[in-house]
Amino acid sequence: MACGVHRPRLLHMTLLNTLFVNPAPRPAWDLGAFRMLAECRAAEGSLGGDFYALRLRGPKRLAVVIGDACGRGREGASLLPSVLSHIEELVVRPVPPSHLLRHLNRGLVGQLSSDRFVTGAAIEIDGQAGTVTVANAGHVPAVLRRASGEVRIIGRASGPPLGILEDSSYFDETYQFGSGDVIVLMTDGILEAVETDLQGMPTLTALVGQGGGSGSAVHRRLLAQLTAQPTRDPDDMMLLSLELMAQTRVATLSGIQALA
Image (cartoon, rainbow, N blue to C red; front, side, top):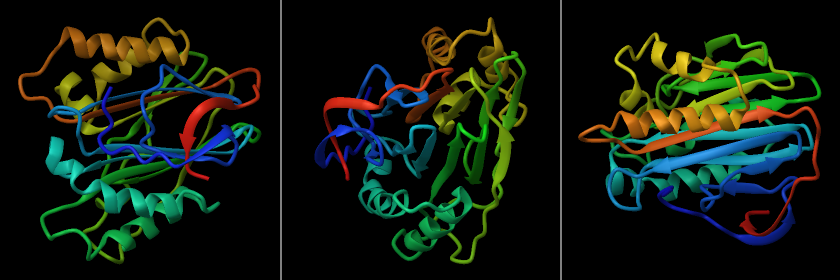
């Protein structure tokens, strides 16, 4: 796994209220009431323009941002320092996903050249309330699989990519999200490698719903599909699979460098 530009900072023993931006690879993240798997593959060597950030705001409240800087490999990675510095400032604020994207967009306008942009989606899961809220800036929508087996696409783009128009607006969509539900976030490298119908996403929804199972099982199925169906000229790829667990654990991670 290669996630482009890593931004480690201070050493912490607890994950609560700690911000992680493009963290170094881990098999899985146990985040209080949540379990997350992440896979990032760069189109060129170890550097790519896909990124994510997460902050556990409480034992049952998690904020995640996923994005894709325009360009493959090193070209996309060259945009990440300014993008990630803005995310570090914004994800720590307790604002709705749409507000986070709006502020991120304003920060990037003027910093990116006219032919560069960033797509992104922000989500906040409130396990106590049983909801997930999504806002999307020109990014691939999320796939939600309920514990019942129902699968649906949520959070389609409500505004343009980031860094293009200063006055762009984005809107929140809120859905029920309960124990055993799984949400899958991805960049377009995953979408284009798996799908022929980029709007309907039938292959992805079928894979996410196939055979049920945990978020980890969903994640493994999607990675197996990428292996079975390689592409000649792959883009950078980012895949996140998040599940709300039945029991809340203490979220600790010894020896991980994180941003306070």
